[in-house]
Length: 486
Image (cartoon, rainbow, N blue to C red; front, side, top):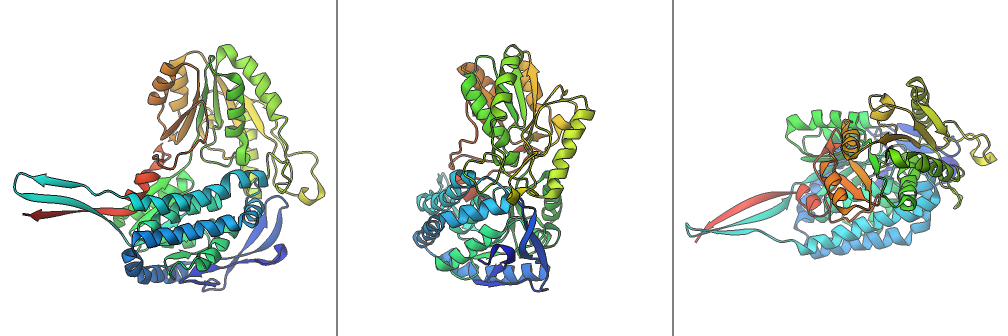
């Protein structure tokens, strides 16, 4: 990788690194400093065509490669990622603005796990067989489709890119992946590690660039039969409108406005610690963050006192410092958007109980970075935009409720349905409320505790389809029934 002042992010097509065909580039910034640190290939349809062609050429050989050999290569790639651990966590921290301690704890370990999980999952496939009364046997084959189009976001760059690439190629597809142009460093480093792992040319292709050019070209490409997209709901709508008339297989993991429901009988120490993480990890830039905190009225005052105290202990600072809890937001534009919601909350009658502004004093290296204090807002009704709309920053609302029915009503009173957390010591209530909340995942007395065997995805405007475990293996393959008359 080049010096920080002159980073050059290149495409990886057919096993080779190279610039965009047009020679165009995009500026790359470091969120913590606000400074331009390099340039990124600004790919377009021409580059996507080249990548798809390479993936299509590689598909026949790769799809016929024995599962054991595909597994070995994916495990080799996981080992190489793990061997480059310190380098990758620094890249991820510099690219995203997240604390390096979070990248060390969450992002890079999960990328390693993604490749290892799907590398071994394909060794345990089962086929269905049905004997009929007409002296015939029916069995089901699951076969790869071809070139998978994979589009991943900026908030968890390598984590979510590997979540798509690993099952796509493990099941015998080849792929064209587009990471976010805002956070491309670990994707380019992955390209280099793919070559080192000796995964055949064209199996994995990574194309950099903006969504309207590179992303749209992947979504609309006639030789790409399936699309896995993670990102904002508005962009997901565009992807769906493009893909649906072409009868592509589609998985969309979109936005969230997730409730964190705290009942009076909860272990308050655990609930506050979990809520602190779900509110402000990764600067609140995780689609699963619990940005709507719903608290039973009898403990509301005690919760608020303790939650504000703990929030104000969080260290906002240099992401490269292990002591930092809250780093920088991804861009100046995103910071302005989040600050706009804080101002909107005031206009809607909300009270900014804590935070709500940029930090007053930061070390010289990060003095011009895109930072915001963790922000807690109360006093808003569920009809308010601040309560309804995804902010995707370190901003949460806290709302009291009186009983279980009201808690469920408030939890469901948004267009999203990605995840929720319920905090209670009453086992019966935990099951009742989890069943009634309209979310793809409901955690009870925890948050972001993931088992990769389980289904992951959202309801309502939070997406379409499920990935994870057998759901990923099924999404990236097509079932075929074979009937044999005896």
